[in-house]
Structure formats: C-alpha cells, structure tokens
Length: 368
Length: 167
Image 1 (spheres, helix red, strand yellow):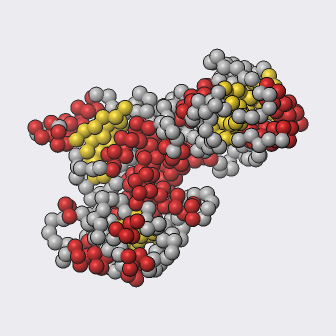
Image 2 (cartoon, rainbow over the protein chains, first blue to last red; image 1 turned 90 degrees about the horizontal axis):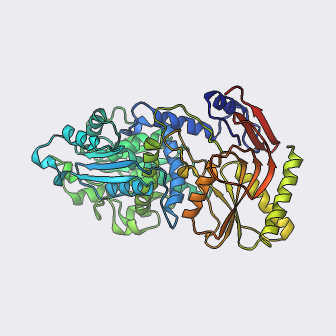
Image 3 (tube, rainbow over the protein chains, first blue to last red; image 1 turned 180 degrees about the vertical axis):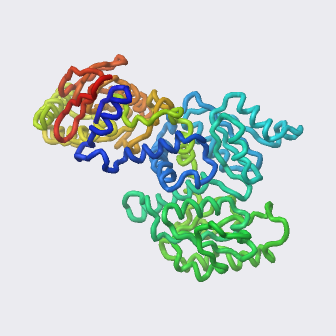
C-alpha cells in the first residue's frame, strides 16, 4: 500500500498513484475506496443526521450494511467492544415506550466505548410541563454528540435536528419512519441470502419478492422498509385490508394486494407487521380474530410458502394474531436474528455519524 | 525492490521466524488490512514449504482502534478474521510498510482484545523510517530511507517509491 505524506497535494498524488496489490488498477476503476468516498459524503454532509431512509439512498444503505459486517465480527468476540467512539456521548431520548430499540442503541453505543445517557419522558421535567424544545436544548447544552430520538409525532426528530448541535438519529417518529429498523431488516435479509447461497452477501436485491403484511397504515416500519428494500432493488407488495392501507399510496414504490393467500406462493420474504391498537382511533378491522383468519401467518399458510422463504417481524409480536407461535419457532423465522443484528447495524450508524471528520476533506489513505 | 527481491526477502524472513521461535509451534501469522494480508498469506505458504507445518493465518483490520478517528473518515476495509484464540500464542504481525508506527500501535490494542498472546513479533517488507511512536520491527525486508512526503508502495510488481511533489 501507499504511505502518503500529510498534505493535500500528497493525498491527491497518492489517490492517482496507488494501485491495489494484485491489480494494476487505473485511478478511475471502482474499488472499495470508492465506497468509502461515498460514505464520507454521507458522514460529512451538512446535516450529519439520520432522519429518513431517503437521506441515505442506495449507496448510503450499502455503506451502513458493509460497515455492519465489521461490527458483527466485533460483537462475536469475547470482549465485544472497540474504542472507536471513546469520549463521545450518546443520549437516548424516548418520548414513547420501547424495549428493543432503546436497549439496542445503548448496547451499540457502549460497544463503541461511547458514554450513554438515558432520557425517559415519564420521569423527566416533561411531566412538569417543559416543552420538547427546552428539553432537547437542555440535554444538548450538556455536550452530547448524538441524540437518538423516538417520539409519537411524525417529524419530531427533524425538528430536534434543527434545534441542537448534536447528530440526531430517528428511532421512530409516529407513523412516519424508523430508518434503523429498515437497515437491520435489510442486513438480516442479506445475511440470510448469503447463507442460503453460501456465498458473499448480495448488494443487490433484484428479483427478491417481499410481502409486507398487516397494519401498513399505522406503521413507520413499513414506510422505511419499503424505501430501503426498493432502493436495493427488491419488489415489494403491501398486503392489507383496504382499511389498514394509508389514505394515499402515492410515492410508495410498491404493489398492493388485499388478500394474503394469492401472494404466499410467490413470495421470498414475508414481513409481518404488528397490529398497532394503540395508534388506532376507531375501528379498522371487525375483530382481531377475523384479521388473524385472513392475514395471520398460521401454520397452514406457512406450509404454502416456498421452502426457503423467510419470515420476519419487527416486534413486539401479537402471537396468534399476525403470526402463530409454531411458525415463529420454525427455521424460516428470522425474528431473533433481526434483534441480534440491530446492534452491529446501529453501531455502524453511530460510527458513521460520530466517527466522521468534522466537515473535513476525505483523505482516503492512512499514514502507516 | 524487484518482484524477485521481495520474494527473496520473504524467504529470508520465513527462515528468521522459524529460527527465532525454534520452529513454528504456537505461531499465528496475522496480516494487517490491506497491504499486510497478501504478504502474510505468502509467509504462511513459505513456512509450510520450509517447516512442513500449517501455521494458522488471520487478518486484522485496525480501523476501530486508530487514533485519528474524527480527524479523517476512518473506514474498515474488511472484517477482522482470526483462526483461533490468541491466548498463549506467538503472533507474527505482518504489514507491507512501517512508517509512523501508528497502525502497529492500533494493531497491538486490537490484539489485546482478541486474547492474551504470549508474544507479538512484527514483520514488515519495508521500514521507511519517520517513526512517531517507540515501535520497532523484528523482521525487515528492506530498510528504505525516504522523505516524509514520498509514497512507498508494495505490490505484486515489487516495491515502488513515488515522489509526491513539494510538501
């Protein structure tokens, strides 16, 4: 490899002079370096936040997935911790309840050696009437580097990003988006495909048919996943009764079906969503039993899936409604794997946002 | 250095490794991403030819241990892969060019997280000087005096020095 000096002139010269071992590559040949260059754009972009899957685009998604491969190796070690973000502070601000997302982000931050702070709405001064803005500005003033924000209102993390100096990660905002869930789902699919094909993990999901089943209307997971999966080339079909579809599907790159049964046989991934009773104002289905009968993944329906079809659910699950307990225990179910992969994927997101040069030029080579 | 010079240096280093360690038992050869990995693979082959033993071979990416995270965009090249627990082993770290010593410093920290090796030795194809930390190699292909602003490159075509122009 090359051992450059430290000036910009030296960097430029190295960029054109270097060739990888085993190849005599002209400077314009795409290599892994080009990926890091695009990542640098993501990480050094003016906003430095992850608010929507749309912020990432296909290149940004792949950057996260590739980086997560390296962090997955770290999480398998006896000491699953690296000093990458030593001295940085990550605050989790959950204005809405959560088990796995908050713990997953905190685990990710700790495995990067960052310090963590936890904010929970119910025990805070919010209950004394402090506004969202005053709350986040107070936390920002303590000198945190990243805020992981969950809020019941769509757009809340965007507003927070406009008020604070810290990087903001959207950990779920109302019915809008949940970008890190979509990223860990794509990572999990990619990992399962690699295992099935016993080869490298694919960067292109072309030809992959994904059915997203259930309460699309209230689901931020569905929106983020449709964006991410279609960006990677997958063909997404939304399966739900008309009452559980969003009022408008304009801008959703997906097909729609009001029945699950005809879709089953021609699906590679079945992604089941939770019935979000807490967001439902009014009646959307006659009864949970009737919903389960038409849209639940029962053992009988699971038997009609292709033998290597994958079954996913973002959790928390209503067993017996969206999915039968027996299906969950089958080999095709990736639910535990999704939770497991959440940690390395969130490590990748935090590292990209906090490990970046502060607006600096990309210097692709490390001095030896 | 020509391709043949690099090959001869590797053969000599392989012999030196065997001599110093009285054989290859308990050795693990670990290449640093990316330049050290192909050299480490060739060293393992040579050790097999010379000593008739298969020495475990790993690759180490030190990106998450670097001391310049936040100063420039640091990215790993490839996930680290270790063939076995390092506890009690003698690790031979392999890199192409030894320069400031900061990569090796990061590698020593990374190794510590992967188990308590009995000893760590360092093999490099080129030692170009300009160390910024108290680190020295145990096996050297060639000592190559350079200016700080020159680029040194080890590839299948041998070792090349490029002038990068004025600092």
